[in-house]
Length: 210
Image 1 (spheres, rainbow, N blue to C red):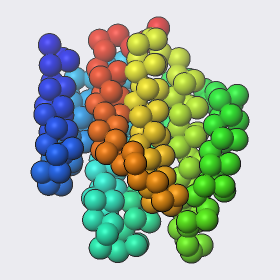
Image 2 (image 1 turned 90 degrees about the vertical axis):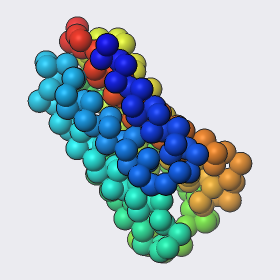
Image 3 (image 1 turned 135 degrees about the vertical axis):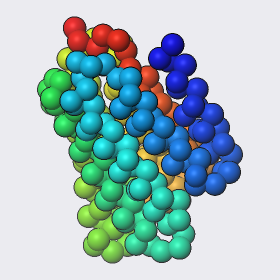
Image 4 (image 1 turned 90 degrees about the horizontal axis):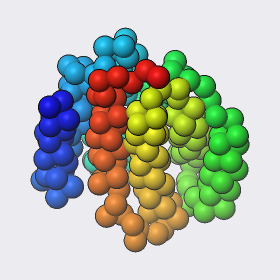
């Protein structure tokens, strides 16, 4: 029955993807936070608050990104807040496992090349440069930490897939915003909200501990 609660964010996500207003974007994210707060595994409840905090911060960050056309600074604020959200994901992962250093090395090698060869030419200003680079690095750490979680396989891989979808969504944003390739922009919102729903799905298992 607990999985049926995911119908709520899925429905909100459908309206959000159809661009029916920011309310549905926020509702998707915050409904996931509420579900985790109410029915997540009790053994993980103290640490789930890191995820809930990450989701709440993400909702604020998403507001800035949704209205980034109003001001260049809004985009920077959004990136910085999503950086903070990733810290919540990382703390949860490290409290339940370890950092996969081999994967982190591989991710950094790929994404730093991606940054300097594809994104850097389109970035203007030291603040934007620093914000995007820092966010790229924390995203790689977040995914490597998620892979290193020592919980039940379905929880581990579900959570890691959720983080992967988030990183994938951000990669598409970067391609469109700085590399001039917007051919995949239609995937940004579906993968972003799917990441939150998948993470929630992974963490409401009755038994997450090995």
